[in-house]
Image (cartoon, rainbow, N blue to C red; front, side, top):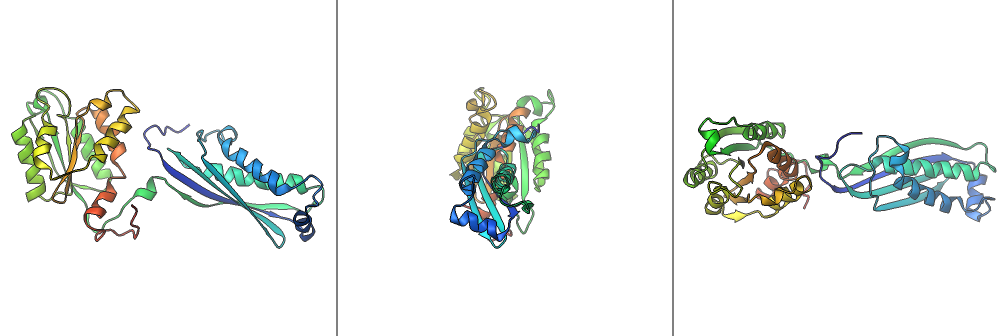
Amino acid sequence: MRDISRKFSTLRTATAEATLLASPDTLACIRRGEVPKGDPLAVAKVAAIQAAKDTSRIIPYCHPVGVEAVDIDFDLQEGAIITTVTVKAVHKTGVEMEALTAASVAALTLYDMLKMIDDSMEIIGVKLLEKRGGKSDFRNAYDRPLRAAVLVLSDSIAAGEKDDRSGKLIVERLEAEGFQVGDYRIIPDDTVQIRSALIRYADIDNYDLVLTTGGTGFSHRDNTPEAMREVIEREIPGIPEALRNYGQDRTPYAMLSRGKAGLRGDTIIVNLPGSSRGVAESLDALFPGLMHAFGMLWGYSGHTDGKERR
């Protein structure tokens, strides 16, 4: 089974359709309520709901999903019954298989209940009509490349006593997300130097994003939040809240981070932990949602995908 532990939960929806061909006489029997086994639509609806909830027990590689809504619609057309199923769940993975399985089982149930009066029936197709809520839905495209800087804050790394892993990890991830990384720098845990670097990145270099790593703990040399307080003009409390919440689901130590996030001009500055694991988890929580922030800053003037999600 695929590892989805790094993913974040979002509202997922999927709609699937199944088509059962049946004779006009069979459809007339359904409308008149004369099917010997009872109402096939009511039974097929219950079967579809059960199938959506039990998909992981039927399809081996499907993750168990806490299905939160299943909507079934039957359209009796000329010579066909079209079943449409929409499934919703707040989860880390999509629910398209739940919708497809539910539509398939509904069609099979209709077939079973109607076969004694119609041996010409045929299920001619099951298809996915739409799915939403996955990572691709939160991608934002802009008409210019986004520029970023990475600032590593550590006395020991700056002194050459340790190798930097976290900063390099940030650079790799930023480049994978489409950023142009214009500067990668290592400085000591010194409030004056941190403040000076951040101000330069925002006021002179005009970077879109600055990510720092280190200096967010309880040590007397962990000065990043204090430097941030003197630099940022507007705080973004939701970002560190999201990072800590994501991390807390994976380690009890995430709550100890004092990292901040905020704006200086049009530059977004975010503090990440110093450990490479903490950085990796924070980046998973940060992207792709952070990408929408730049469109917000620019009033969507640089936004090119035509969708103003709020």
